[in-house]
Amino acid sequence: MKNKTPNKYGIAAAVVGVLMMIFGIYRGEAEAVLAKAVRICLECIGIG
Amino acid sequence: MDKKQRSKKQKSTEAPRHIFQLLWAVITNSFVTGFIQGRIYTGSLKNLCVPGLNCYSCPGALGSCPIGSLQSLISSRNYKFTFYVSGFLIFIGAVFGRFVCGWLCPFGLVQDLLHKIPFPKKLRTFRGDKILRKLKYVILLVFVIILPMVIVDITGQGDPWFCKYICPAGMLQGGLPLTLLNEGLRDTIGFLYAWKFVILAITVILSIIIYRPFCKYICPLGAIYSFFNKISVFTLRCDKEKCVECGKCGKVCKMNVDPKEAPNHSECIRCGLCEKNCPTGAISCNWKTGSNKNSENIKPENNDEY
Ligand code: SF4
Ligand code: SF4
Image (cartoon, rainbow over all chains, first blue to last red; front, side, top):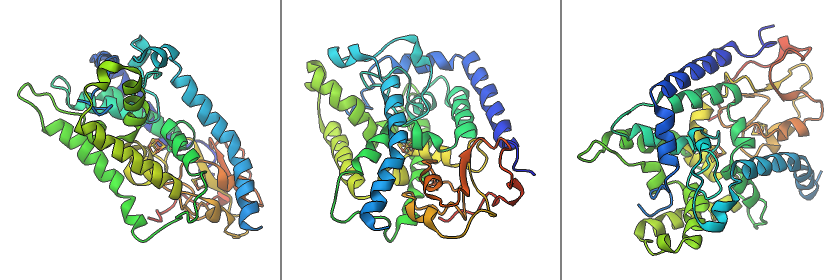
């Protein structure tokens, strides 16, 4: 029977993930990601 | 069924997945102006990460690469740890597991297509294959986490070591198109560019011979998602009552997983090939919704083969 429903650990981990994302956004991390991503990453393309 | 017939059947059963992968890759890299003008998208969608390995310096990229973002925050003097990107990876891993690798990663698609190029002797496995699969975890730990965090300059800023020295997706999606389209960047090419070009060339050649070598041995993102395969909501199941132990599922699996023994093996990319090739319908890829009548007999989450 235990396999009938979605894995509870999976659901719990997904909830933890969402909470961490919300806290990260609150800390301003989404803007930091944006700031990095809107400039050409010279390291990524093999120049920097 | 002879070899030719078998590969023909695999081809037809894989087409829907490849169409899905292609559509996803096109949608998430649809900033056409970037390809015309040799620049990248700078809009607010780049706040968000995409689930697969997708360089954010690709001229078409609308979202951010999770591995690039992870390193950029870990190496930043202001953060050193990222709740946002770690939370994103945990969420995507917990819901999808390595389904992302099979269906939502452009670099996975590139390797899938390269492996379709005929070659006299394709390598299914080789001595050292099992141990080499652990390399991606070392790369995750050393190049994505430790080095960007620890080796910093005088201002406390580190480098994205994986992006800089290893990632062939950055060269394929960002380096090649941008240097072709942008004269200013072309003039700055040096040793690092050559180094990354060689890595890409090796990856391309190996992908023709071995199925997804980068995913199996190098990719830190696949390594992260592999931790979640056993608990992810999207999962693979083998119904023991229907299974006749013919072994077809294990034979068709190009990731060398035996889904009847280890349906949630860390190397399974949820491509669905085993499900399509099972003669009794014992294998199913789904969301564990309770629709399976023999759920009590389903094989338990299993020990790793590697
Ligand atoms: S292992 Fe990495 S490159 Fe391969 S499909 Fe998964 S995320 Fe993409
Ligand atoms: S076990 Fe099945 S779904 Fe997983 S990689 Fe192998 S063939 Fe694909």
